[in-house]
Amino acid sequence: MDSQLSLWFCSMSTAFCFVFFSFTLLFSLFSLLIFVLRLKLWCTCEICQAYLTSSWTKDFDNLCDWYTHLLKNSATGTIHIHVLGNIITANPANVEHMLKTRFENYPKGKPFSTLLGDLLGRGIFNVDGDSWKFQRKMASLELGGVSVRTHAFDIVRSEIQSRLLPLLSSVAGKEQVLDLQDVFRRFSFDNICKFSFGLDPGCLELSLPVSDLAEAFDLASKISAQRALASSSLIWKIKRLLNSGTEKQLKETIKVVDEFAEEMIKQRREEGFSDRYDLLSRFMGTINDDKYLRDIVVSFLLAGRDTVASGLTSFFWLLSQHPEVESAIREEVERVTGSSDEQFASFNQMREMHYLHAALYESLRLFPPVQFDSKYAQEDDILPDDTFVRKGTRVTYHPYAMGRMERIWGPDCLHYKPERWLQNGRYVPENLYKFPVFQAGKRVCLGKEIALVEMKCVVLAVVRRFNIRVPHSNQAPRFAAGLTATLRGGLPILVQEREA
View 1 (cartoon, rainbow, N blue to C red):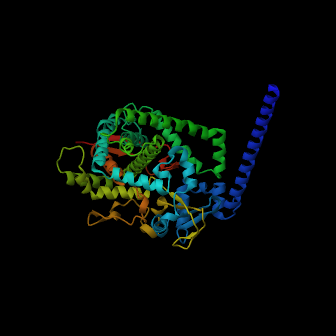
View 2: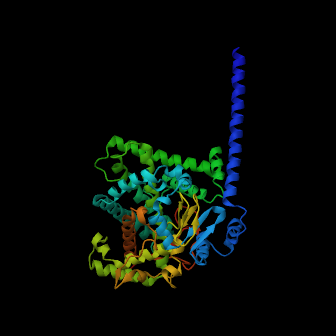
View 3: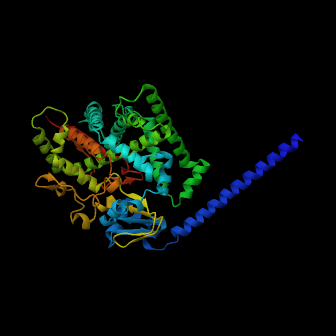
C-alpha cells in the first residue's frame, strides 16, 4: 500500500511539473506575441529599420549622438521609435509637461521599476506614489540639514587631501599614464560609502586596491542597464528564471551588495546610531525594516557615485581642450581667495566663484551624467508639440540631445562656452526644463548642491597644483552602455606639477 501511495505521489508530482512548465512556456509565448503585436517589430519606417539593423553605427559612434541627429531634424524636437514603444523628446515644453504640468501622469512606471528592481528594490529612484513621497520628504530633511552638508564637505576634503592629491603627485612628471575616470570613480565611491554607510572602502589608496564591493556594484549596475537594451523584457526574464548568463552574474553581484548592507545594518544596530551622521544611521531612526533600509541607501550609493565621477571626467576632458578656461578658473581662485595658504576654499568663497560654477554647468550641458530619463504614461495624453501619447507608452526626455540643439542654445551650441551662463560676470541660471540635467519639478535632484560642492572642491584642488593633459583629446568620446555616461577605455591623462 505504501509503495502504491508513493508511486501515486511521484506520478502526480511529475504531472504537476509537466503542467506547470507547459503553462509557463505557453504563457511566455503568448506574452511574446502580445509584445510583438504592441511594439510593431515589423515596422518598416527608416528610423526603426536603422535601429533594428544597427545601420546607424556607420555614421555615429554613440546611440545618443544618433538620437541627437534625429531630434535635430525633427520639426517638433520629438521622435518615435515604434519598435521600442518609445517617444523621445528634446523639446523643453514637453519636458515641463512631463515633469511639472502632468507630473502624476508620468511616473517612473512598472517597466522601469522591474528593470532595476533586483538592484534598487524599493529605493527612492525606483518607486512612485506614497513610497516615493515618503522617501523624498525624509531625504529632503536629511540632505538639507547644515550638519549633514558639513559632514559631506569634511569627507570630500579628507579624501582629496589624503588620497587624491598624493596619488596625482606620485605620477606627476613621470610620463606615467593614469586613467582619470577610474580615479574619479574610486574617489566618489570612497566618498559615497563614507557618507551613506560610514564605511571607508579605501579604493583610492596609492596602491589602487581592488574592492569586491565596488566591482560587484559596477557589474550589477551595468547588467541592470543592459536589460533595457533587450528587444523584449522576456529575454532577460527567462534568463533570470533559468539563472543563466548575465542574470546569473547579476544575482551573484547583488548578493555581495546585500551581504555588505546587511552586515552594516546589523553592526550599526549593535553599536548604536543616534550620534552618527551617515545616511544609514539617520534613516535608521525612522525605519525599522532592514530590507527597506538597504534599498534606500543602495539607491543613494548609485546616485552619488557614478554621476559625480562622470561629471568630473567630462569636465577635465573639456578643460584639456580649453586652456583659456583653465586659466580663467585659476585667476578667479586667486582673486577670491587672495594670498590665503588654505588648501580648500570655504563655502562662502565658492559661492563667489561664478566662472567656476558656469564652467561646470557648461560641461554638464554638453555631457550630462544621465543622458536620458524615461517615464511611462498612465493615461492617454497629448504633449505640447501635439504628439499623441498612448497609455503605457514610454516617454523619454534627452538632456544630452537638448544640450546640442540650436533652437535651445543657439548656433554655438556645440562649443564649450562658460560665458553663456554669465551676465556681467555673475552666474545666471537657465530654465530647468531647458537644462534638465538635475531633473526638474517635483523630482529635482535633492543631492544637487552636495554634488556640485564635491565637484568644485576637486576642480579647485587639482587645477591649483597640477596641469592635467589628455593625449589625443581631440578624439570624440565613445560611451559604454550603462545607467550613467561612462567613457569606453577610460580617460588616460598625463600629470604635471605646477611651478609654485
